[in-house]
Length: 313
Length: 313
Image 1 (cartoon, each protein chain N blue to C red):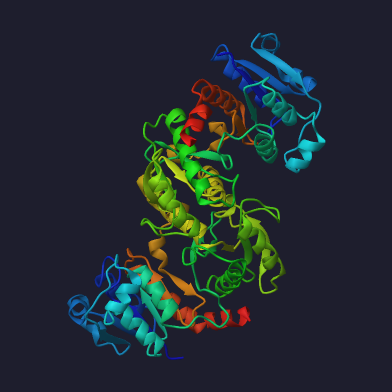
Image 2: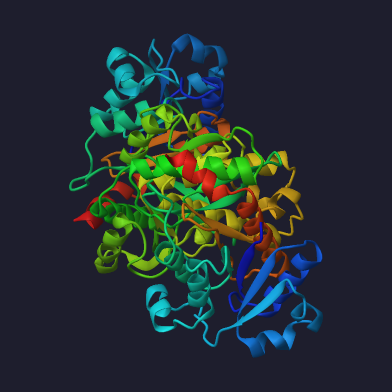
């Protein structure tokens, strides 16, 4: 399968240099995939090695505008149709690229993913997830982490399905255990949302539901896929991110706490849309960009979104 | 002021021994206060030093029943009226004791606090809070941590007031900064609850509102009083508790992470009820019991709940 992966070269705090370095890292370790570098030609050419520019796997798509990190997403996408992000989504919507990656304005990336390409059939609302380092060395998946601050039970049920497919194919967990994040272990505990979600997950034959999990279980590998609405999930994610800063400040040099350095993972794929869209951290460096391209490639090769669509039927 | 503090000697995993040791620790370092030890006479007498029993500051109230840690709270309180917890609340309701402490069944303690004594005038629902160790050495207060899984904006507004009074009087923070836990910094961010709460906090003249705080700010001393509904708060608290376990397991020996050992703090006062009720951890040891008695004494001396009542008018 010939793949075309689009990368916003202007997104992130270190653009375009770190994006260029990431592309270089990726190209040196892989073959085949065609990368479309979207961004300001002059800015990119200043930092890109000429060998990379003449590589047949690389194309440069010039865009003259950039959406700033703090611009209003919807407004910026409307007013800057020639920005790198807007251009990326145009290419994605018209099939010129198969997936799109950016470490730029998160809101604009989410709005773009929600409105310029289709949600998978039947998906109420797409979701964003994050990897959670588990204390025993394993890796869990938490979703939603902020796209859906208010949710209905049926949405959490879909998150469980999408998360399970992603964990199975992308995290190589054969039968992902799904846990509902809650304030107590027993069925019937929790706020109205959690109470109403529990029976849906219990009856869901597409997933392996293990019941409620509590705050103390999040890092303890009690579940592989941890489901909640985007408000709680976002608080957990950002708290988890701060643990790396604290560990650094306290000079812990601890392997586990080092895994909370989310920059190294790359980005967060938007789940539930028809094509892979990867949203990176603003602070993404070369390794993160290379990882985002790899995740993107892997999602395409394994047809993760197609499998998600099937599981959601 | 003559104070009578009631202590459930049968509550907690190490009852009554650790409670006895805590009482001893407290008595050795203070004067005046009268302690009523509530529990099984035989069990207590087996472990209590005779000097303590003959101390004029100590009275023993015999109760023959105990509510187990995993019993259903409401059912247990009803079916075991002669249990140490039920007896404690009876003494509290009738004014025989001025405050009540237990490390026993949390649910039974909360049900007792909600239904056997009055809520402060105007309080929609009482709340439970926790201390949060801040990375810079300071201490923050988080509430609600689980008593109210679903909240209305007006409740969060009251939590902000109660938390501010508690932080000022008990944590010695002159002008506590109140932060609304949310998914973004700007006003207008968040789920429906947070969006509706923001303007209430902004207009609240009883508090010093500094705006939204995010997950990454929780341990960074951005706010002194951190407000959210009890679902998110409970997840944060239990996640924070697990950090101590992880730090122990990873053998960090780090001063900051050691502060996540919540056993040492004593317990959580129920805020918004008319008399101090302190709910301890099941794993409470001597130090925790002594601390709970001190917190209880201090809350009475400083008339924390009276001040809370004033601030809520």
